[in-house]
Length: 391
Image 1 (spheres, rainbow, N blue to C red):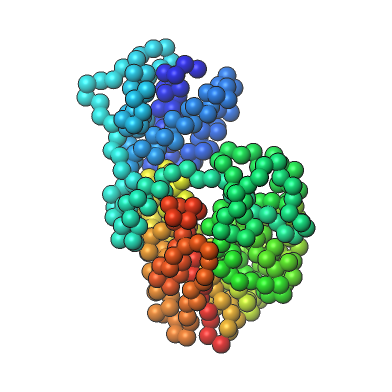
Image 2: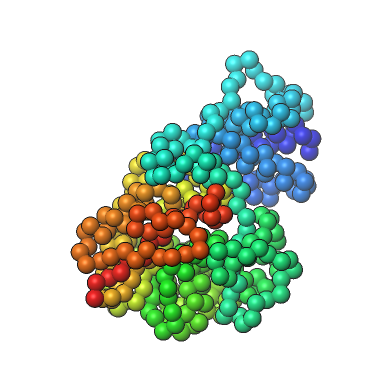
């Protein structure tokens, strides 16, 4: 592909990403992967260059752009090599029109920038949300001593974490295939550390998904006790047990829940759990480094729905935990509506409960919990709080 053809391809992919953001369609990484799957003529250098252009343009635009050309023109303001490629050449983009304007820049849609600022996120901290995330792994102690790895990684704040550059082929390593390591961001690993879980306890992972945190908890418990991993998403939950088998995590049981009827399905564990982990669905504002187009998908109404769901999950968790037990609440969000404010509302409505602000090697206190930021802690953005049930 010529440089101009790469730009035109990126524009077409951006059109698809923008349409998907408007219609709640597939994420950008899947759109790009599907596009190249049907176009085998594109070599590895072409795929890498087009992907860089697409994500560069996504990061360069604040609000949702009107189209792929406008998004690419926004990127061209930062990369002077792009504009001359709008030359009308074969397979390249049509020449620029006098009335064409680039898409608006910024961090995110204005309302969302304002919400982050109101949550105490400074401008430079917002800008760091659009950087590029490294690749973190978690060493799995259930597999014995630390495995030999092809590359030496950098230690992070989590006790079993190693960091590698983005794109490191970790999934091809024998240690990954054997379950000796898992891919997991340091912030997610630290959220597990906040639980203080130990062997012999009975744990409910209320929003387990595919089970990254579930596996980390099983390792912390040294395969002693029990973990009931729950979710309402059958597809995601179905991935957990194969992963658990590979990791040697033998104390996990899964349970599919019906949205809105979770308590009935969990009647047998009501008031019995030592720990309930609520890794709640959220806006994902702390993960824009990995999914920068996610900021185009979020609306104030969706944020309100997330907050309502989080409050309901916290209420459910409070009914599952035993007297003197604990609930750990975690979201990959930097918005107070989903973090510190959510915890404050829970404590105000539940007399006798208290927040036990954890001490970690990263993060700063925000309200009654801890918040991690990419620019300061080198992790995904995260909020985590530990709540103690009255005895």
